[in-house]
Structure formats: C-alpha cells, structure tokens
Amino acid sequence: MNTKNEAIDSLIQKCLPILELEKKYKEKTNITNCGRKPRLTDEFYLRYILIVLIEGITWDALNLFKIGCDSSTIRKKYSSWVTRGYIDQFHLLLLKHYSDYKCEHEINNDIYGDSTTVINYHGLKQNTGIGIKFRSKQAVTLHTQCDINRIITSMNLCPANESDISQVEYLIENSLIPINGTYRNPVYLGCDKAYISKDVSSSLKLKNIILTCPPKQYGKKQKIKPINKNNLKKATCMTKKQFENNKRYKKKKQIEKTKKTKLNKRLKKLIKKHTKKLPKKRISNKRKDVLKKRITVEHSYNVLKRGYKRLNGMRERNPNNYISFVKLANSIEIIKFLSLHNNNIVN
Image 1 (tube, rainbow, N blue to C red):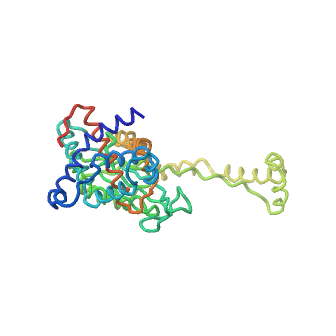
Image 2: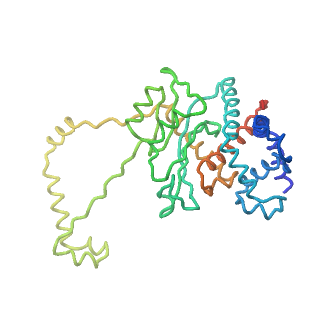
Image 3: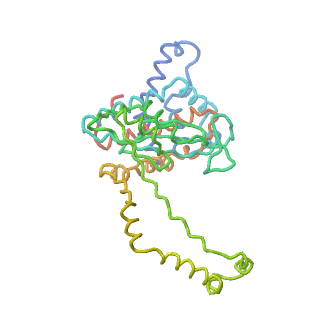
C-alpha cells in the first residue's frame, strides 16, 4: 500500500491546476469570507477521487476506509468539478503542452481510430443501447482516436447500437489537437474493416485525410454435392464414405466429367483471350505501415482498462461523469509521457 500511496501523492502534486481553478472560483464568489472555513482541503478530495479511478472502487466503499467524512461528499465534489469544467480545462492544458512537444520534435501526425463497448450497470435507457458484445444488456460505446504514443486526441460516448462509421467525421471535427494535413503530405487515419465506406473516404480526402482500412477478403463458396431424390433417405443415415461409395453417386460424377471433357481446346483458348483477370488492388508501403501500427489504439484501451479499473464499466448515471474519468486518466498518461522525456510541465 505504501507504493500506491506514494504514486498517488506524486499525481496530486502534478494535478495542482485543478485545485488552483477551485481557489479562483472561491475568490470570485467570496465563499472564503462567508461562513465557516472548510474542514477538508481540496487535496483530500482529489486523493480519494484518484483512488476510485485507479482501483475501481464504488463511492460507497470509501466508508470502509474510515476517511473522516461520508463518501457522498466526495461524490458531490467530483460532480461539481465536472459541471464547472475543471477537468476539461486541465485536459486541454496538458494537450497543448503535448502538441507543442510534437511540433518541436516533428512526431508523425497519423491517427488511429477504434471503439470499445462498456456495460451500463444501472441499466439506464438514456444514451444507451443493446450491442453485440453484451446481449440483452444496456451498453455504451466509447469512440476514440489516438496518436502513435497511445494518447487520445478526441473521444465521444454513444449508445452501443449506433454504427462506428457515423462517428468518424465528428471526432475529426472536434479533435483537441489540430490535424495539419496537406495535399503532398496528407494525414493517414487507420481503422478496422467496420469503417469502410466510400462516402466517408471521399469527404475526408477533401480535408487531406486518407482513410486506410484492410481490404475485405471474400472466402470461396463451398461446392454442394449432388444428391438424387431417390437417395435422400439413405444419405441422411449413411456416413460420408458409404455415401461416396454408392453406385448412383458415382454415376452422377462420371456424367459431370464427360460434360467438361466435351469442351474443345480451341474454345478454351478463345475464352482465355476474351476473359482477362482483373488485377488485384495493391496497397502502398505507407498504408501497410499504418495498418501495422493501428494496434496502438487497442494498446491504449488496454492501458486505460487495466491501469484505471473504474473505466471497465459505467456506474455513473450521468455520462459526462464517465467521460471526465476518461479525460482524467488520459491527462495522467500525458504527464507520465512528458516526465519520461524530461519536459517541464507548466501549471
């Protein structure tokens, strides 16, 4: 537990801009001058909000730790920070520092998109739907677009019964980091086969964004074996070897072979001349690299769901509270990335 407490203490020091926004709000409204002074500090609230996010505990389970206050006070404090927009401002501030770091070091601007389904434990029907993964249960899909460094640049939360293609243009328009693509150097967007559509790809080309998806491979149709009407009852009871050794089946095969051999060689040559095979669609080397690196989106989901267990399921009645948890987790990942690369974060 000591290692976890030390990690949370370090995060609190780096998440100080959230507390500064709370102080500015109190100074404007003159809350500090009226009434009694608050018994608990803002750092106390932020500590247990991070514990809920990382360990995936419910709000009611905080009472078992004997904090010194009711768990509902921390929950109400978190919801007030969400409504005032403190977490959104903190997330935007860190993304600006990250975009400046990318401009300095000239990191690749390619984007990778995907979606994940999340169960809604309360079973609310507002902003939810029944998806394929969790059948007969209300669920939500989280659509995201991330960078090579597994940092989310845009996100949206929709019901599970909506298609993935409908959210592509919305995520690009509302991306928090600007997408700078030119005619000579376009930005590539790597996605699954579910995102294949001519209309979306043509609209994105006008914005100098190329949608790259793996090509569809249609399997060969299985040949149906011929069966006589008189032999249907026997075929159901027989095994494959007994059915193939049947005399009537052998006669049927011989008739088919004779029909094929009757075609003259001259006719075959003429057919080959007039029927040319269509060339296969070739993929450029750049698109191959994008499709190989598309797995970074799945790695980003793995980091969020394992490192921040609260995101495995939607326990909040308000969807904005869940999205703010995702933004807070993404902002912590940006802090870790910039600290590894020795970049000073300005509060």
